[in-house]
Length: 427
Ligand code: PGA
Ligand code: ZN
Image (cartoon, rainbow, N blue to C red):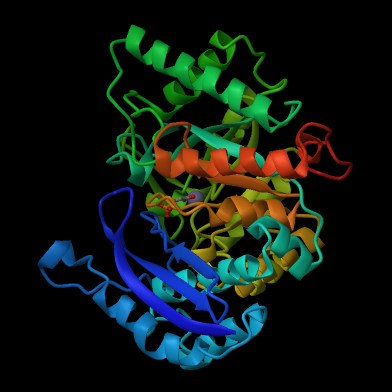
């Protein structure tokens, strides 16, 4: 049983306040989790409750911490820790608003994850194993999606597109994904240095996008894959997060870097041109979250050759996954626990997606910490992918390193990328 719940303020990778929660069991076992924070948020995701005002740029979390130490603690203490669904439902009952605006999604997500950690600790099992046993899933290491160049809201909008990433579905195991990614990451840095364009890194640790066009970023990524000794499109493929809601509204899109404005159809044509020219296997939020017809049109045209992920578009909501599937929009979902606000809702979304044969990508936020819950969730749920950011900075590397530790217990053979599973998008 849960004996105590304690919230406190800690600080994230961007130096902003965030919420940490400890859940202590009667036997003394401790579960701890920290809420991450996004910069390019969907309008329908759980509210990241901040104090506002002038102090700490309005970003302090005293109200969210008070939610934890007040109503959330009162609702959770005495509960059976293994009843994750019950704990999450108890929090929902305290705040029936759809976006958890009164408790704060940052308060509920940290509390919900801390309950999950406490249940695993109480049972003496690693979190990934607890997740697999609790939800009846087959654990396997996720296929990573790793950022090489940052962009969009994570790089002062230096380029319009947010994430230029690679995936290594052809790797033998997780270790080899790390080695190949390291080679590509440093090759990209060498190319930037040679061009006199090396200018540090963006929020998630990818190289700062000192480019004259979005295409130049793609060209450079291809060149980096080649310089690393790989054939682009063979073992290594490209994955993009367009994050189109950040530069488009009402079906009008404004590419600031190229000083161009375009409608949905022109954007779809432009992205289609990229799919023809570059080895892109996955594309996230290709159109805005308020442009459902364009998302369906994009999926009709390209859904059989590329993974199309809804992030801002689906905000880790199982009902939105169902609706999108019915409308023929997207074929994969990004799962960010803090978009939903609880573990249970996030896992419902993961299952709704996988149950339809969609891809499911467990994801970090651009504001992160040393918390490695998502490495365990992605592994425990199995058959998934993991998006964390780049191949530098400890807020990112902590997640990849945790996967390496899990691999020792689970076995590298459990990596889903090494032997393409029938029916997966890359198989
Ligand atoms: P965010 O972006 O965490 O800044 O919202 C990440 C993403 O769009 O995938
Ligand atoms: Zn995204």
